Length: 504
Image 1 (cartoon, rainbow, N blue to C red):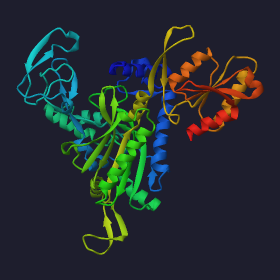
Image 2 (image 1 turned 180 degrees about the vertical axis):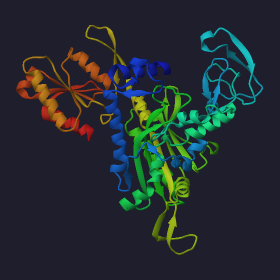
Image 3 (image 1 turned 45 degrees about the horizontal axis):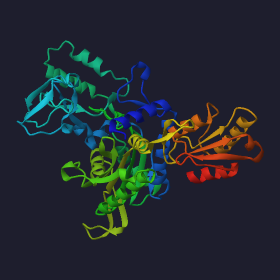
Image 4 (image 1 turned 135 degrees about the vertical axis):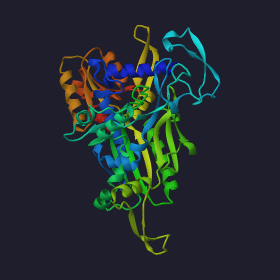
């Protein structure tokens, strides 16, 4: 039975060993919270995003896709409230020196006594007792109540655009000025804000800013949606659980604009639609659940929100949020920019005037899924170990990734039994036939046939086609199913048809 740590350790090991995910800049010691997706990881990520795009955009007549710039005008973030509010309370533990978010720390009664590990995990034998401070929380690493005061930690990555050197300008202007530390800090921030641009912390704002352009160029009618897949960046205090929480990640987001008063209906619709989508590719549908936010969890602009949660090894945690954002975003951008971000319905009665024709600011339902989190979920869901015996009667473990065929990086592997007698040439010809149909196919003639099967089980390849000596004359292959390990001898054309059917 896998423990939580065992399972995550196996997933991380498999991800590196087979080319799903690598640590960024690994030969230089790695960069914390940054990951590169190898050949298999890039394919798995692309397959997930393509299925999302197909479900959200291609299968609907009223959703339109965009691909917006990562860098946006700084006023976008002023209007959205990110510049003023997008920060977290950062605290240092004076005992173990860890840094953590105060709002995520373990809660305790202020004034209560608590036992903690002196200096942290490395000295677990020495325990001390301390008093929980008025803030009512302790260090999540060592449980110490000895903490620094809270301070704001900015969550957005800042850079500059154009020929601007804010630090150089600061030194030139204030280098010889006898200012206090507080004054120097204020002046430094003031100079740094000149020409500042930010890496977006979410993809959503571009869809609000482009609302009017999409409305005009598509002649869309309410209700309609704008969809986008793209990278976002958040300077997280804590990164954890491999690719679950990182500073650079990808989102799959939809902003669905609807008539005021209809938002509850559309929130219910999208909540069920998104849950069904996640479950449709999973082996264990019970690993997903819906959780409605309590009122004190809601963002100030939201009137309701649901999370689709997945049962990760550490417990249920967020995979996708579906929020009812009211009309906050469009109104804010309209206020700050002066642009009219509204919708006119000539067929509706204006409830304020009781006259024909209603101009209003649409409400928004936002399903926002993490692409990288979804990838992690499907790796966890697909990972299986099966106990058995080998041909010599010894115990063996078969590791298999039971990925849905549509998500599997490699769809089929064509394997010549031996490297002679025309078998490699026949196998390569079959592989080319599959590739012509847009199916990522692997030609593999290394090692024994058993080891090749094991390798493709481990990377999630749903079908293996084995070419043997008889195949040369009867044009038949042995088609092996990954999950059942069942093997049937069929014609080459039938094998290709079965694979195409599974991917349709």
